Length: 480
View 1 (cartoon, rainbow, N blue to C red):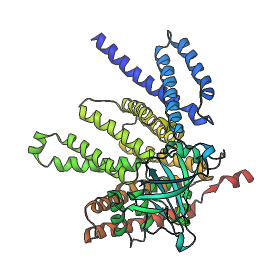
View 2 (view 1 turned 90 degrees about the vertical axis):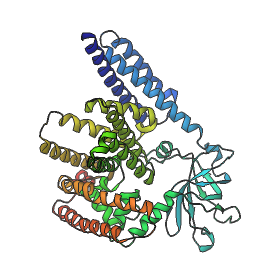
View 3 (view 1 turned 180 degrees about the vertical axis):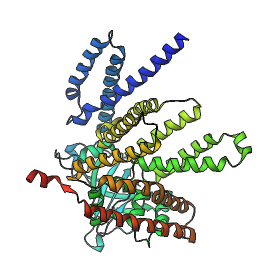
View 4 (view 1 turned 120 degrees about the vertical axis):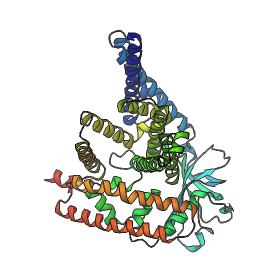
């Protein structure tokens, strides 16, 4: 019995030490300007010295430092591997005529289109290119509507993904590295002979997007539905975007791990209740197993539809781990599950340490979990969680947008449950309908009308709260 308890104790603290080390091992990457042996060597030497010092007295601390060093080596080596495929600066402005496939849903404006292009064999070994296509007259416009899955031959002017260091600006170079973009390019629209479509076979995802946009086309809240179901925020007006920033609710209309988790939860509980209606089915397969598999399946489909962004991948990994633990039939604490999530995220998403979202989301989870650990009252637990999330989003808005939302707590207290339990589920049902039906029907229009009615009241509430407690720009505070 004593030996069993000691083995369990070692198993627990070793997992927590590994998780803590892997989490901290990514911190240097977030602050260094370039990934190289010279910039990372001081951190590795320091970690090695700490391992030697803590080995005998504090073995768990030695495991933590060792995991941090291994995590740093793993993440930096993966980053260097990604950089090997990047277009060299010496090859900038070089023309590349290549055949390939449009591998993302194109973003199309009146005189501009942007999309990801995955070329076939090329002399630079490029795997994915972020392409912009500009046309200032009808003669330069593509002859066919750009859609995901089409095969094209394009004449491209290449550019290396790098950006000037600017603490207040968007780091394009880091974004390209994280998303596997090897080069930027623009289409030489004048060279009509080289720019031609080879195959118009669009992807199934593009077909679903077309069906979904047809369903919501007549809605007064078209931009809301499009953002919540597909992650496309281009249709928001300046007034709407400003309202989200000032009320601290911008995180609700951007596809993130929260939305993937809500889809999983909705699918899990609905399938669980339906399966339990039949005793015979429950004897064949336990209801919880069906619910876990169905929830994982639907959340994966939804993540595929919104483009498998970094936050959605992160949420899927966590959900997959939860599913495996649930299917194993063994009881695990929440802290143990979080530790394994950190370990798996580090192994499967080596460049996550470069994203602010990772540190914000994991910090939020750890802070909320710690504060709510000893609270047995579920009502107080939810109220605390809402307040903590609102305060966190206010801090994020202050850092990212330069304004401090004074009404974020009140706005999120209503906006979070409204979006989470009414608007998003109805939009997800519309998405499921678009998977199988090409035309709009009475059911889909009823769901859409109900959603629009809810959004009318929600936007009215946000406007009233924002007028009563307006946001404060940080520049005004500094001037004062």
